[in-house]
Length: 76
Image (cartoon, rainbow, N blue to C red; front, side, top):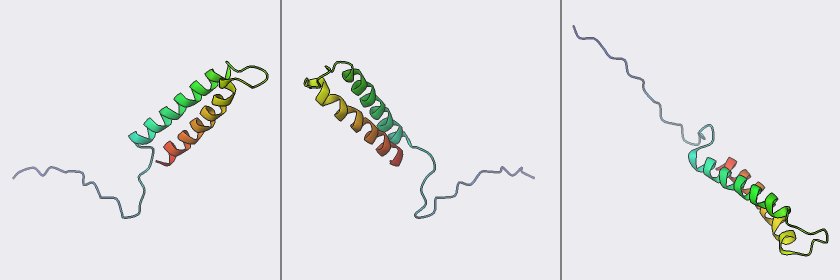
């Protein structure tokens, strides 16, 4: 008599059910957002006290876009 081999059956996800955790694309988007934050805070060190140079304009844009990118990566 032959031995029966037990195999694990993977059930397909139900329609409308979301996968758990962050997938690979989401992790890449989060990493890009962290990179934007690092660049934004580095540019922030180059600002002058009056806030009239290029770094004073660019750093808040980079920092805010970094946080938004991280949020998008979590959603994706």
